[in-house]
Image (cartoon, rainbow, N blue to C red):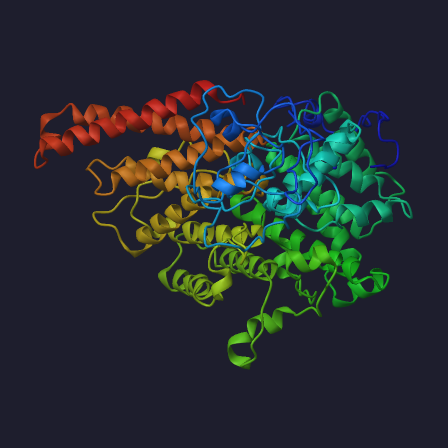
Length: 635
């Protein structure tokens, strides 16, 4: 996020034809000063096989016994007594050496190999799980939780490792020497930091451009200024880029609409990046305009055809794979925009595309690209009898195709049961026939698989959109939550029918997705609107006049959703709007419930313990919501 054309130049202003809605967009900063974690260049463990050295102070064990220390690490006395050998400048608070202590998992010698990412049974990507990492001895206070912070000001790990690996678990990939080397590098310029930010935060959710090293090598051979400008602007949204953010935005718009710009796959990639950034910043109308333009260009150049990757890949498998990913990511983005905003019609769904399906992320990043498989292979896998493994990206494509089929249902008013059941069969089949490795959003190394995360996210969102019109959960309490899509009126019935159970189950599954221990802001920004869908269901259920059996669980899910929206607000204005609306509705429901509880007849049939527990829980969630309201960034 390195050298590229005119890294610090100021782009000319947009032409007078540029819509006024652009004004100030680039300068809307969620200003958070980046911080760095200093690492001493001399830090490191002393190999026990090294010759004796002279030290000014004895180890703590010898000090405690007032004995002479030979200065080895460990010293000969500690080796004999099987004690921990530690050298520090001060012994304040020292209680004496631990005899026969178990090996310290956080102590690593310089000769140790890097830990295996799949070692151990613990899963660090789940909240509350133990993190089985091995920290360098120079980072005595190293906290694994600091590797996946929510703040956009996260310091970046050393270059030379791809952004996806950095995002997943950088502390498993780096060595002490690499961290020291990173600390000694010259300070990056703002454009360089923005490119790194793009790869660190944005790229995992939309992995279409070439990996950084290969992209910059290619940029020396051909004009990729428009693509780099788009990447710099979107990357600047995650960090404190100052006034450069507005400059990057103007430059990106100017270059992608420059009269002589080549209509090719790189232009498609640049336009998709910009439209996603605009959509996340509540510039939905302009984002749809760019989406319409990029769809036309993609169809015009034949990006949807099987031959495009071969003709324009230059015989380089990684470039060919990038073109396949470019088409399918545009396809997914088109579906997401249509699904969450309900103001476009998923145009690309009707294009008969025969592009090969993308491979797994690690294959793309390593360059070991397998022979691509196709949609017909995916659709026929159950009946062909062939054992085939499809990538997470392929399941993401299959999930958005189900959304397209749902959107093509007849729009003759209220959906009928037959059509809904037909689409539900598609959604259920997608879930039931997932291989074991794809049934959650973690890969075999217990790291987050962002493509499967989005695939599951889309499937749950489809379930809510499909069943909500026929459900019996009154949606009017959440009618003010319109940040992503217009309110859809649903009347409540006497009992929860099957459709109601579908949307409640999907809403709960979406809330669970918040618990993956990765930066929320590293998910695609479309997660904002899926969280909003889930919140509407939770709030509608919480607003029911009677006590709900699982009300405490429901409150926790509302907390999760609000907390996630609050974190996403650090980057995306759309999340800030949704967060404010969800919190406001939660307050209204709480006040209404308090008014109901003041009526003695409301508590008939409940024990005193149940009454006190319910009222205390309501007070707890409102206290937390009020705290969030006062600490949230301005819209």
